[in-house]
Image (cartoon, rainbow, N blue to C red; front, side, top):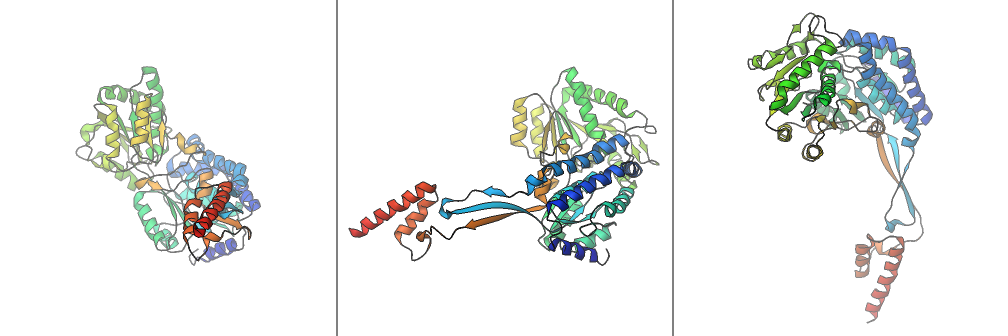
Length: 486
């Protein structure tokens, strides 16, 4: 696509109306499901090669997510496409209105390397459902998955409407120089700023799914409840891609008196889930590449970090594996507490009382996700009312991502725009207002020449329904005529 002739073809296909019909949209969604079903083993192998993902994790976080999303869209697409009746002010009677979803046009989707299948093809489900032509740019940091997507998409989906472009930052720069009707990006805030700056040149709308330091607030629990809580924290921190997840746990806030017992519980759970030897860890991903591995090592090698490590910290440079690591009260101005970690390091910050967690979170950029483990309804209300985040999940982690009925997206530096389910359809659609007017029952007060009667009529008319407006018109006319007669 060096000469971008493919982009011209996509625009031509869109203008011809090829993608607008429900038959095309449903046909492409079924083809995508067929692609996944027939190539599941190849996807498993690609995810293992790029990230070391076990097939169970690969299905849970990638293949299953994509199939669920496409099935949900197929089930609901007719309802999503249907025009919605609009309520009109009485002044326009007789008339009717509707809100008609229409596709934006030709859209660009940038995939992400940490979930290179689901975070690349799940947005594609929304773009197809909304009737767009699409260019998909997989992440070059997951090269095996990128190549597989590039090989399989043309075999199953409409080549005149959906294309895959591989390459690094140079290719991304060339793509961003083109004019798009929408850009959807999943990745870091640093690259998100580049995307947004490029989009601004053409006033292109963007959805930025970024990240941030997602906190856990941990309240007091009984010993039996704490066992469940710890499993969900360990699974939410180290389970998805070894902490390389935008909605993964970044740090944990707990009362000081609970910290030591919590750490011992976390240690036991980590050993049960993943093992306790960095050379033989199981069911955990490796770091994506040497650059990211070195970045994480530099966080641990900070002079202030040595005293903070209370568990883990072992490294396997040859295999790019970092042992699950717990840090207790690292300096709050250290890089591990100011930068998004995106790896298997968990800082634990102790507080005098758990309510102090609100101020701690509010002193930092808004996170993509906030997790809180508590039975205290007052604390729940305080979190909802006094903090801002892309989402809030009580008493679990990560599960909000698979809920098609909930919007997924950030706020502030964690991104903007939303998708999943109907929200994906909306993200790639324009809601066009359509108004049908009659030529009868003309209201003369809307036209010059102006007079006091017309001013009073217009001033009051906005607050009346149909019958009230007619009565108002008659009443004002009588009063106006009487006053002129006097």
